[in-house]
Image 1 (cartoon, rainbow, N blue to C red):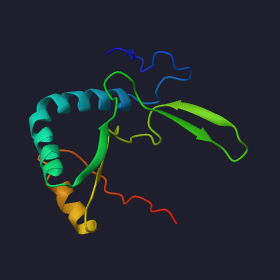
Image 2: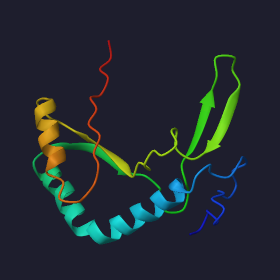
Image 3: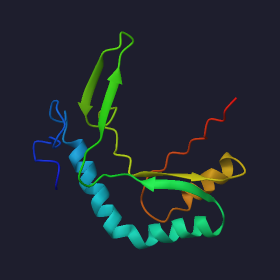
Image 4: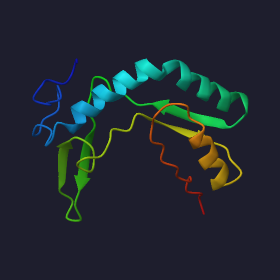
Length: 128
């Protein structure tokens, strides 16, 4: 994989190696899943778009560059961690914004994804 060596270091990013091998393993799993399920996944997305439910979304870079987390403390100091925000957390592969009437409809859309994935459903914070 370009950008990540076997010690889980990311090219061009200063800091310690990933604390666990989970990030590299998750990157490889996502890459394999994308190849195996691309047709079903794209059909599902196409169905959302055709139904007028898909508002937006993007796939995130997960194949060459591991996630990094910047934590800023109350005193203003920042720490860069190569890896996801929480140890053991799976790598986020992408996101969608869908237009639904309520949470129940959002859950039904999420359950209709024909691939073995985890979908986290969250509402968008509405401005005051």
